[in-house]
Amino acid sequence: MPVPFIDLRRFEPDFMDRWMEIARRVSENTAFVGGPEVAKLEDTLKQRAECAAAVGCANGTDALQLALRAVGVGPGDVVLLPDATFWATFEAVANVGGRAVTVDIDLADGQMDFDLFVQAVEKYRPKAAMLVHLYGWSSARLDDFRTFCRERELPLVEDGAQSFGTLWNGRSIYADALIATTSFYPAKVLGSCGDAGAVYCSTEELAAQVRLLGNHGRVSHYEHGVVGWNSRMAGFDAAWLNLTLEYIDDRIASRRAACGRYDSRLSELGARIIGPPKGYLANGYLHVTLQDPGHRDAMMEVLKEKGVGSATVYPGAMSKQPGTKGWSDGAVGGENADFLSRGVLNLPVFHGIGEDEVEEVLAAYEEALSRTRATA
Ligand SMILES: *Cc1c(COP(=O)(O)O)cnc(C)c1O
Image 1 (cartoon, rainbow, N blue to C red):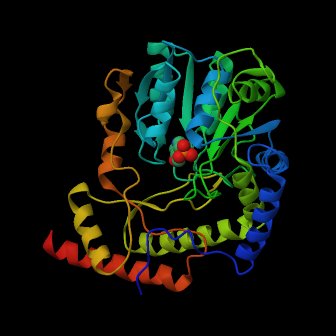
Image 2: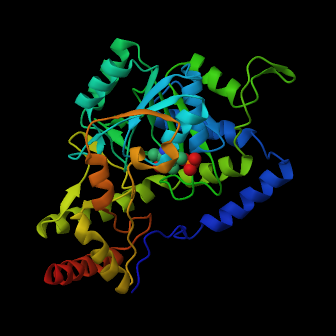
Image 3: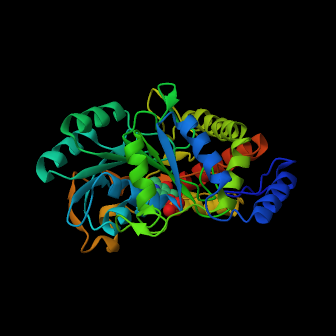
């Protein structure tokens, strides 16, 4: 039985019929941009995130740009970000005119290294910093990041594109953030039927600023207080997300179950697993093992031959990307992010993945391990 790396078609039996009805209603009401579905979604997101306000927008990259602008980042301002993330985090800094400085990660949790971060703040005196909750959890030192930044009055933008449903000490990971973002790209944990995103704000003032920037700087219909852009959310996306939210807890539970099974079996096999530190309940977005970089591609070949999908999220550190040229003011720390990117191997996780599929993946992994060890 082949197992894909990801399969977005595992809809619950009644999902599609319900969606067709909702799509008809949204179409008949012509609520195509903004409207009641967006308002309902923002209210649900705010409650789930335990924050003061949530603002829907066009995608997760825009969410980052809106958040950076809302905390005052503009042309020439230095912004710190982790060296291991998706490229959009870096791009967001450049797109608002900022200068990016990358900070290396801690291989224990895969997240930005707090001690290096403190050194980078002393050296660069940044205007703002970004922390990424990578893989569906975040740093063991999340509270240290937040406290340090609050004391320094250094705005911390948290990229939570991968962390919908993640809990930190029993509360939403977004709950104590100054400002955090998420992405509803279809392959994310809460995925839409197109591109969409949201910004979680700790104050109404920040939320008002995000709304202003994402709707042409409008203070009234034809009065523009600032230069923003159009990052409004579509009605169809909000309607799809509102429906999906009725199923999301079961979906996250199926992801967690798959990751739990991988963890226990792979640790028996002696695999090096990078997983959530103590205090987190991860959302099962990705499962992460670290392979010997010289060995990983051979492992993936065998998995492929057995019909099992795998991926390398992400195969390159930010500081090594050709696109950083002209936008980066430096890189702090060593080569951990680079090492992670050369060794990372992700096994299939998606909502609705069956226990039999998980067993199939594990059997293929074991075979790949014995065959590649034999030839190593
Ligand atoms: C997906 C992702 C983004 C970008 O979100 P889009 O909705 O695709 O624009 C940003 N940061 C991280 C860490 C992501 O995983």
